[in-house]
Length: 160
Image 1 (cartoon, rainbow, N blue to C red):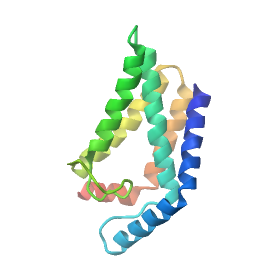
Image 2: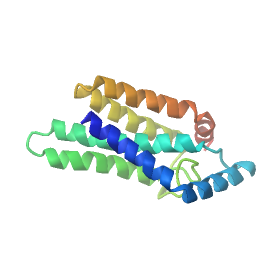
Image 3: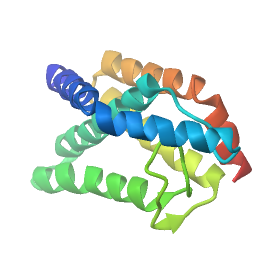
Image 4: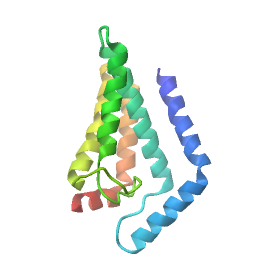
């Protein structure tokens, strides 16, 4: 299963790298908005890392849900990551540099930050709970790396 998660992450990063036109547009848009003082920019490698973290976390949540079930394994494996993805997608801050900038429910920045940290923490906990300590450590370390290079975004979120 660990190999599957890593393969999914690598596939995600590969897919993102192939979409250079979209990324160039996004970087240009973000740089323009940052120059006008609206929002901070995020480095493209950090956006790829974030996308990989999101996808890996969803897979880990589904894996944990399947592991916890006692007959309804597939329901838990589908509903837990689907619920997490819905919360992730619905509650967002307008003009967030790590997203499209659009939102369904405009959320205060501090609450969005808590949602994100809860999302990644739950995924790491799920891996650790299933005995995948090293994978949980890698996911947690990658999350810390992502946020350590996103300090401008964290500051921006806390000001929203």
